[in-house]
Image 1 (cartoon, rainbow, N blue to C red):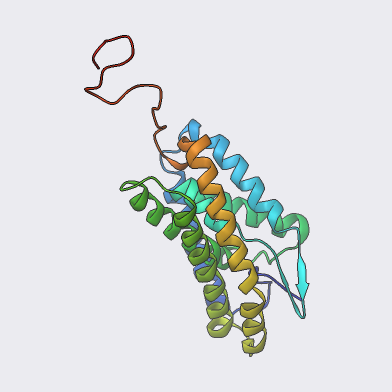
Image 2: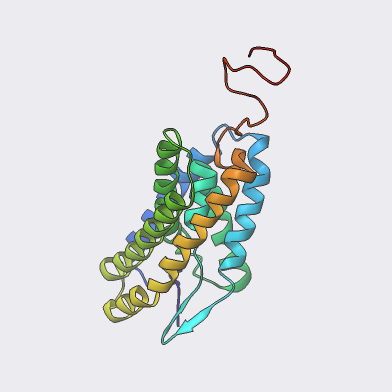
Length: 222
């Protein structure tokens, strides 16, 4: 059975999974650069969530699907998302055989590149206006869709043999997952923007002080 977007050993030509490890090394080197202690709590929580989400499989024909969560990881962790995804993939492969050891690199590319793009888009949008459900939902949908399309493309162009039928089956099976990912990321962004804005890289809104130039109830001008 094809396990979601996790490609197993022996499926791809060696050039593809070797190239995947090269991208993995570059991604980790970039993400680990200037890692701050304040990033550790978010990294731990998101790595655990990413790891656990893949353990709940829903079989659909010859494929099995599960939540991806790379959109949420990208929105919250930005460039640090590569660390969470790499650790999660390694643990999934080593502990449960979910995906192959030789394909950890290419599976990383499939999941981390969309997460990285989601983080960039979120940062730029959040710099202009307060993010909410709509932005999170859009990024979750697009990130999940790109992930599935990359997975299909890798199987189609890099597979050892004809994986076209399985790739298309996987694409159709993941359509509900894409919708769920969008809704989930949307709600997560909405909740975090209000209750834990620093997790999204946002400054908390000050609602306990009157606007500049206004006079408070005690007659003191601010």
